[in-house]
Length: 241
Image (cartoon, rainbow, N blue to C red; front, side, top):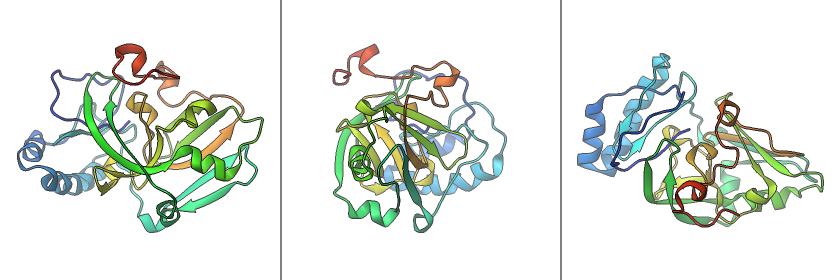
C-alpha cells in the first residue's frame, strides 16, 4: 500500500510490510516548505529507493505523506508507455492508454484517506475516471460477480465485489491534489477506493479483470479484511453498502 499522511496524532505501526527507509530530515523539509518541496523530495528520493533494494521495515515520512511498498523497489512507468487492460468476463475487452483515460469524462472526489495502521489524511483531492465507466464500456457479463486488479509492480493484487466496484466513489485516479500522480504515489494511474482502508487502493494499476468471485488480494491473503470498510470500525465515512 502507498498511503498519504498529514502530521498525525499517533505513530502508526506497519503490519508485516516491507517499506523504504528515508531521511527524517527530508520529511521535515517537506513539512516546512510545503507542496513544492514535497514534489522535489519525491523526485530526489525515488532514485535512492529504486537502488536500495534492502526491503527494510519502517516508514518514509515525506512531508504530508508516508510511502509504503511491498517490493524492494519503487516501480515507475512513463505516461507515454502506460496501458490499462480491462478484460475477463466482459463483452468487449479493451486496452486504454493514459491519453485515452484523460479523454473520458473526469470525476473529482475530495475525501479522506484512511490507513489501516491508524493514521488518516483529511480532504484529499482526487481526479480520475469512475471505475464503473470503464466497466460499462467493456460490458459486464452476467457471470461476473467481482473485479480483480493487478499492479505493474508484479506482486500486488486487490479485489472488489461487482456491487462495490459500481459505486460512485471508486475512482481510477490519475491526479492527486491537482497534480499528476507521481510514481511514488502509485502513478501514472491507481485505484482510489474512497470508503475503504488504503490497502484496497492499489497502486501502479495495469489490469482490471472481471471474475466470477472475489479473489483475496495481497494483504487479505495475509489476514486483512476482504471488504475493508472504514465505516465499519470508526463510523467516519458514509455507511458501507
